[in-house]
Amino acid sequence: MTVESQLRIYRIKEGKMDEWLSGWTRGVLPLRRKFGFRIDGAWVVPGQNTFIWILTFDGPGGFAEKDAAYYDSEARKSLRPDPAPFIEKAETYTMTSALDG
Image (tube, rainbow, N blue to C red):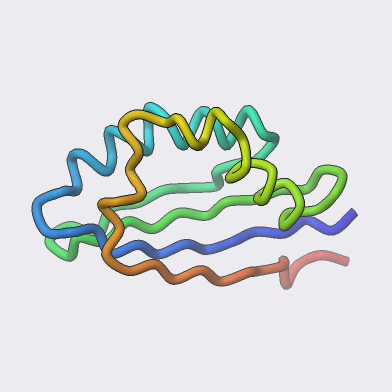
């Protein structure tokens, strides 16, 4: 089983960082954990409207399968507040450890 991580960099709409953080910490974060993901860190870049986090999955089925199940779940579809509309731009980078083996 390969451990796979994603570096996610979000530019949050001007003036919406507090709402974003509220929805992410109260909804996305616990739901991701419920689906077996690990959050290796989450950061706000002050003055840049930027939120950065690292999401990891090392369970059966792999990252892509579990990520699809997360987004297809009724729990995700019914998240309130849903922080997704506050994302202006998203960058996602799939990563594997350079230190394995």
